[in-house]
Each structure stands twice: as structure tokens, then as C-alpha cells.
Image (cartoon, rainbow, N blue to C red; front, side, top):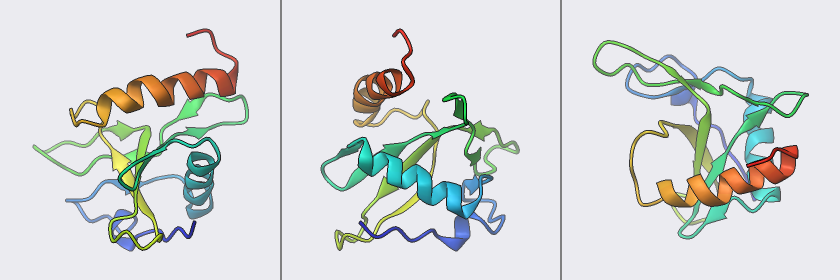
Length: 119
């Protein structure tokens, strides 16, 4: 699955979340999403970035809203044009979408299994 990082999530655009991990780590995060099958129809995937010890790390910072920004650890990957070319951005997990319950159950369970945690 082709992945194309978007420049506006790396160029300090204040209305866009910003990756702070390297572009190579961003691609690795997407690749893990694919490998772990953390993708749900229609064309949405969820990703985490782990350090060498298997601990989830922050991926970047939120868009500046209401005068502040905060660290984010959940990536959302989409195939927005449904042409099998994906891009991603940081997702504020506290925002409630219909994908929230899916990520909370499926992704969290997969992450626990991948890192041998007791959940």
C-alpha cells in the first residue's frame, strides 16, 4: 500500500497537527498499521509509534486550537481518494467519532498482544 506523507503536517501549519517523529518513523508507523491489520473500512487505519522497549511514544503535537497545543500519540491513516494511496495525521483520541470504540477495543487489544502487556 503506497504511503505519501503530507507536507502540511510537517511545515508548522497552525491549523494542522504536526508530526515530531522523523518521516521514516511516520512511514514505519503506517507500515505497522498495515502489518497488524489496524485498518477498518472504509479506508481508515490507526497507528501507534513504539520505542525499542515496546512503549507507545508521542508522534507529534496537535493543531493550535484555543491558543494551546498538546502532545498526541495516535495516528489516523486514510485513503481519502480511495485510490490506495494513503496519508496520515495525528488524531486527538479524546474526540469521539464512530471509530473511537473500534480503536479502543481492537487496536488496544492488538497493542497489548504485540507488547505482551496484561490488559
